[in-house]
Amino acid sequence: MTHDSMTDSDSGTDTQATDGGRESLASNDLEGSDPTTEPLVDSSIDVDGRSDAPASADRTVIESNDLDVYYDDVQALQSIDIEIPAEKVTAIIGPSGCGKSTFLRCINRMNDLVDAARIDGELLFEGKNVYDDDVDPVVLRRKIGMVFQAPNPFPKSIYDNVAYGLEVQGIEGDYDEIVEEALRRAALWDEVKDQLDSSGLDLSGGQQQRLCIARAIAPDPDVILMDEPASALDPVATSKIEDLIEDLAEEYTVIIVTHNMQQAARISDKTAVFLTGGELVEFDDTNKIFENPEHDRVEDYITGKFG
Ligand SMILES: Nc1ncnc2c1ncn2[C@@H]1O[C@H](COP(=O)(O)OP(=O)(O)OP(=O)(O)O)[C@@H](O)[C@H]1O
Image (cartoon, rainbow, N blue to C red):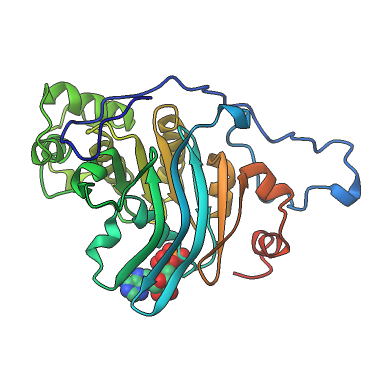
């Protein structure tokens, strides 16, 4: 994939074909297994979401090296090293306060908005340190969009919710086309195509969140960050968002923070487990994390012994 420089003002328009594999992991080596190596997680966590392409096919899009984050004197993340693959869903899980949101907000420099936050180490996007002096955070955030926990549409029409960001970011093009495409990709078009002038605030919570996703993808980012995007939604709306996330990963790299381990197991290819103290304890294929993690602390967390 080519990509535009974060130091210029062009919009990213690049996408790349994906392996698109979606085989079930449900039957993954479970039959006839040796009891000593048997997957530890009981069937209440159903790992059936996505297949993993061979490791060799993975291309790193986000990488952190020895990343520390402090809020004043309190260290929130400790020496985080991670390589996040392109066009997959990576879930970040861990107990409250372990630094999941902090890590997510480092990626598109949302922590710049927090006076107390200080960052050491490297955070690379496509090989470029996003904290270099010549990186424009506005351009960075166009390439790395974000969806928050509570749906937060603007008090504007459905159309303007998607188009407004394009205008602000100086993105040119046929807005009618871009808005329709973004709403289609967010699986909302069919529900709203006859009411584009109605307020985004009149939509249901789940529709509002899909509108926010449409808004995030309209500038055609490479990466979409999601901070517990379904935690405020009912089960039906949550299920729609989960389906949508899986679809989005055919074109975008999705990184999702979730408290919901079943959700991480269902929809992600990779899972990063952060634990108390802001440590990244394990990062691996999702089925490995949930069925046979390397670290006892991860096993204890996954099986609910703490957290
Ligand atoms: N703006 C801030 N100012 C000071 N401390 C902060 C700030 N934001 C987060 N922290 C602290 O940093 C640590 C990590 O917080 P963070 O929100 O990243 O964790 P989290 O794993 O996302 O938690 P949760 O699951 O509860 O949302 C916590 O100790 C938190 O209190």
